[in-house]
Image (cartoon, rainbow, N blue to C red; front, side):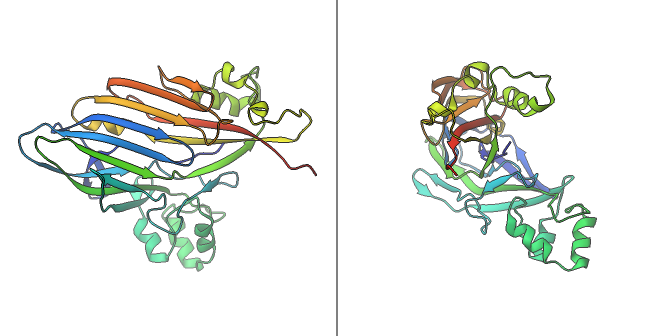
Amino acid sequence: MMAGQSAANDSSVMLRMGGLEFAETDRVAMVSEELYLSPDEVRVTYVMRNLTDAPVTLTVGFPLPPLADFSDDFNPTIPLPDQTNFVGFTTHVDGQQVELTPHVEALVDGEDHADLLTELGIPPIPVYWATIDALEALPVEDVARLQAAGMLDWEGFFPQWELRATFLREQTFPVGRDITIEHRYTPVAGVSLGPPLDPGFDRTAPEADWQVAVSDRYCWDEAMAARDARLAQGIPDIEAEVTYISSEIPYILTTGRNWAGPIGRFSLVVEGESDADMVSLCLPGVRYVSQSRAEFEADNFVPDDDLEVYVYRAVQLPAE
């Protein structure tokens, strides 16, 4: 299974020794949030309101979910791997683009070693082959420093750190006027190749572990599994050789609780890259408009859990 990366809701933050701390405020409320998630684009629009009688200025951060777990079967596509802003993240406030400050942490057991990576000239993205190449080119003494910090395994050059990137800005919330904030970026995506989801799989069978995980984590129920991904993709030939590609899109909603009160109006659209894709997520009340599109709306919404979206499709392999 492929682990993708999306991001999170805005939150006020404090920069302390050892890293960022996400703070709560009762002075600013989120009037509404419109969220769109797909494998190739994430966009979110907030309307924010100052509840006080004086301007409020906060350091606001938008954190990406952690990146870790480099392995041979994880094949991520990183939009801009040679840049600190590796997802092309942009922010507009009332239609005007604003400057952002990326804050990158390379964590092992909660301790940040980003400065060591910078000193050694190692890209901080752990799921990036250029990072592996740079690690393999290091002299023995520098490899030992990384291993001593727990950043490398003792047998190879696979990174053991967790990358956390947060985009920071100073934001002033005026008195008597709502402001609109929009974020856009391309999520880190990857592919996992595997067999089809079987609607009648035996949950106790060892080979069914991944199907159990998909079913439980993304609420992929039997009705969805029974849909024929081959036919959805226009592959009627049952003799054709087919592989199945899945991707995951995580999004951290729970930081939306850091503002005053609930989210006044929340709307979500989840969409595959094509009509042939199948999407699934665990969210009570979600409505599937089609197999490739899900929608959700709620007033006075309090996010209790983060989102994890599963996208699945069949691909016909070239005939030999």
